[in-house]
Amino acid sequence: MYFILLLLLSFLQSAFELPSKVNCLFPHSTQENREISFTTYRPFGQSYLHTSQLQFSTKIKNYTLSSDLFYMGDSLYSELSTSHWVGIKWTAKAIIKFGISYHELDIIDLDKITTFTNSFNINLKISQSSNISILGGHLYQSNTDLELPQSFAIQYLWQNSQHANYNYHIKKEVGFPSEHNLFSTYPLLEDKFYIRIGYLSGSSEIFFSSILRFTKLSAEPFFLYHPQLGQSLGMQINIY
Image 1 (cartoon, rainbow, N blue to C red):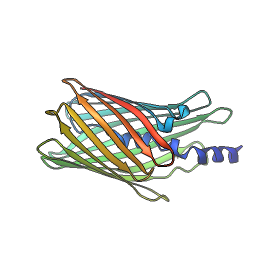
Image 2: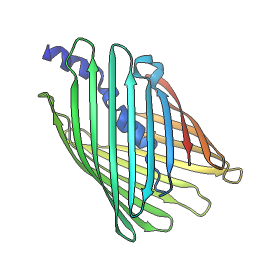
Image 3: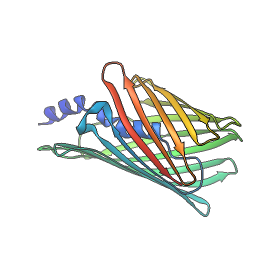
Image 4: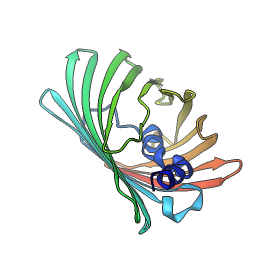
């Protein structure tokens, strides 16, 4: 039975990566105002990989709070992930965050795999136009013998006076090659319409989206293209 489970997980490796991929595509805003985001995403047109993610972030006094809820799957296979962060202003230009995460993988007729994660995040404001985010220290604890890799990531964001921004994200998991993700966002029509392009080296996908901004709302239809697997379609909606 354990061999069957490992065999299934080898085929579902891309599915295991989806929460990390969605968080890379749509990280929490660096703003301290309240924000709610909803993302729906169907990778490569596969219904059993259809994912939904809800993000929430806000500030209470000197603390920033954020939460994610991620779900993917169908009646035969499902994956649930949730994480919660508390941030404390360390200095005038630095915020340190501590987080806990829960991940559950459920395959019909097999035991559930549950994983708990402890994490930290340091956000440094380098200048008025840029900041750097360091995410790491993942400590995995599972109720099975399955060993999930520890990871470390760095994300750099730069924004110019025209509100165009450039986002570079590198992730390294123990025992796996490093992944490099690069995104650029360009404002058009007086900051009401944006286009965003990017590349994810880990999955060899090209990312493209358009962003429509309103006073309290933005909508971002997007797609990713893989040369062998085809395209993935999705939508993100933000409420400020």
